Length: 130
Image 1 (cartoon, rainbow, N blue to C red):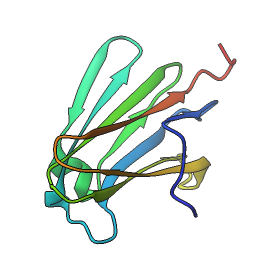
Image 2 (image 1 turned 180 degrees about the horizontal axis):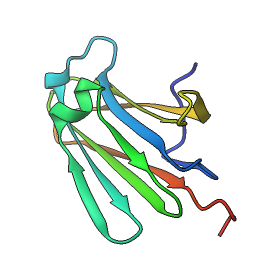
Image 3 (image 1 turned 45 degrees about the vertical axis):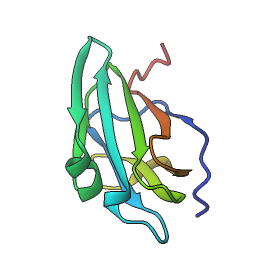
Protein backbone atom coordinates (compact mmCIF):
# COMPACT_ATOMS: atom_id res chain seq x y z
CA UNK A 1 0.00 0.00 0.00
CA UNK A 2 1.34 3.40 -0.96
CA UNK A 3 1.77 5.76 1.97
CA UNK A 4 0.29 8.83 0.27
CA UNK A 5 -3.10 9.44 1.90
CA UNK A 6 -4.27 13.09 1.89
CA UNK A 7 -3.91 15.33 4.95
CA UNK A 8 -7.61 14.99 5.79
CA UNK A 9 -9.24 11.55 5.98
CA UNK A 10 -12.81 10.46 6.77
CA UNK A 11 -14.26 7.21 7.98
CA UNK A 12 -18.07 7.41 7.80
CA UNK A 13 -20.83 5.19 9.19
CA UNK A 14 -18.45 3.47 11.59
CA UNK A 15 -20.15 0.71 13.62
CA UNK A 16 -20.73 1.28 17.32
CA UNK A 17 -18.02 -0.31 19.48
CA UNK A 18 -15.28 0.02 16.85
CA UNK A 19 -11.79 1.24 17.79
CA UNK A 20 -9.51 3.78 16.11
CA UNK A 21 -5.81 2.96 16.10
CA UNK A 22 -3.23 5.67 15.32
CA UNK A 23 0.54 5.40 15.32
CA UNK A 24 3.59 7.23 14.01
CA UNK A 25 6.55 5.20 12.81
CA UNK A 26 10.02 6.30 11.75
CA UNK A 27 10.44 6.32 7.99
CA UNK A 28 13.32 4.73 6.11
CA UNK A 29 16.66 6.00 7.43
CA UNK A 30 14.98 7.72 10.40
CA UNK A 31 14.44 6.88 14.07
CA UNK A 32 11.75 7.91 16.55
CA UNK A 33 14.33 10.35 18.00
CA UNK A 34 14.29 12.33 14.73
CA UNK A 35 10.82 13.72 15.45
CA UNK A 36 8.28 14.43 18.19
CA UNK A 37 4.71 13.29 17.56
CA UNK A 38 1.57 14.28 19.45
CA UNK A 39 -2.12 13.84 18.74
CA UNK A 40 -5.35 15.26 20.09
CA UNK A 41 -8.33 12.92 20.15
CA UNK A 42 -11.45 15.09 20.12
CA UNK A 43 -14.98 13.86 20.81
CA UNK A 44 -17.89 15.97 19.54
CA UNK A 45 -18.92 16.82 23.11
CA UNK A 46 -15.69 18.77 23.63
CA UNK A 47 -13.88 16.03 25.51
CA UNK A 48 -10.22 16.09 24.45
CA UNK A 49 -7.55 13.50 25.11
CA UNK A 50 -3.87 14.04 24.29
CA UNK A 51 -1.73 11.18 23.00
CA UNK A 52 2.00 11.74 23.55
CA UNK A 53 5.03 10.69 21.52
CA UNK A 54 5.64 7.47 23.48
CA UNK A 55 2.01 6.43 23.01
CA UNK A 56 2.04 7.11 19.27
CA UNK A 57 5.37 5.44 18.46
CA UNK A 58 4.43 2.34 20.49
CA UNK A 59 1.69 1.65 17.92
CA UNK A 60 -0.38 -0.11 20.59
CA UNK A 61 -2.89 2.59 21.59
CA UNK A 62 -6.53 2.50 20.55
CA UNK A 63 -9.68 4.39 21.50
CA UNK A 64 -13.22 3.05 21.51
CA UNK A 65 -15.81 4.70 19.26
CA UNK A 66 -19.43 4.74 20.38
CA UNK A 67 -22.56 5.81 18.54
CA UNK A 68 -23.77 8.48 17.91
CA UNK A 69 -20.67 10.65 17.94
CA UNK A 70 -18.18 12.42 15.74
CA UNK A 71 -14.49 12.14 16.52
CA UNK A 72 -11.37 13.81 15.17
CA UNK A 73 -7.72 12.95 15.62
CA UNK A 74 -5.24 15.72 14.84
CA UNK A 75 -1.71 14.38 14.50
CA UNK A 76 1.33 16.71 14.52
CA UNK A 77 4.90 15.64 13.80
CA UNK A 78 7.75 18.09 14.53
CA UNK A 79 11.14 17.17 13.14
CA UNK A 80 14.36 17.50 15.17
CA UNK A 81 17.12 16.78 12.65
CA UNK A 82 19.07 19.21 10.47
CA UNK A 83 18.92 16.57 7.73
CA UNK A 84 15.61 15.58 6.09
CA UNK A 85 13.90 12.77 8.00
CA UNK A 86 10.58 10.99 7.50
CA UNK A 87 7.78 9.59 9.58
CA UNK A 88 4.78 7.46 8.64
CA UNK A 89 1.43 8.43 10.16
CA UNK A 90 -0.85 5.40 10.17
CA UNK A 91 -4.45 4.96 11.25
CA UNK A 92 -7.25 2.47 10.93
CA UNK A 93 -10.66 1.70 12.33
CA UNK A 94 -11.17 -1.84 13.60
CA UNK A 95 -14.78 -3.03 13.81
CA UNK A 96 -16.03 -5.02 16.84
CA UNK A 97 -15.58 -8.29 14.90
CA UNK A 98 -11.87 -7.45 14.37
CA UNK A 99 -12.11 -6.60 10.67
CA UNK A 100 -10.96 -3.27 9.24
CA UNK A 101 -13.60 -0.62 8.42
CA UNK A 102 -12.95 1.21 5.17
CA UNK A 103 -9.43 1.95 3.98
CA UNK A 104 -6.51 2.27 6.40
CA UNK A 105 -4.72 5.63 6.49
CA UNK A 106 -1.02 6.08 5.77
CA UNK A 107 0.82 9.33 5.07
CA UNK A 108 4.56 9.80 4.86
CA UNK A 109 5.73 13.21 6.08
CA UNK A 110 9.23 14.59 5.58
CA UNK A 111 10.90 17.51 7.31
CA UNK A 112 13.92 19.08 8.94
CA UNK A 113 14.48 20.74 12.34
CA UNK A 114 11.43 22.65 13.66
CA UNK A 115 9.29 21.84 10.61
CA UNK A 116 5.82 20.60 11.58
CA UNK A 117 3.59 18.36 9.47
CA UNK A 118 -0.04 17.67 10.37
CA UNK A 119 -2.96 15.47 9.38
CA UNK A 120 -6.57 15.18 10.52
CA UNK A 121 -8.54 11.96 10.79
CA UNK A 122 -12.33 12.29 11.12
CA UNK A 123 -14.57 9.45 12.30
CA UNK A 124 -18.35 9.58 12.08
CA UNK A 125 -20.34 6.93 13.98
CA UNK A 126 -23.69 8.55 13.20
CA UNK A 127 -25.49 5.76 11.38
CA UNK A 128 -28.22 8.00 9.91
CA UNK A 129 -25.64 10.08 8.01
CA UNK A 130 -26.38 13.20 10.08
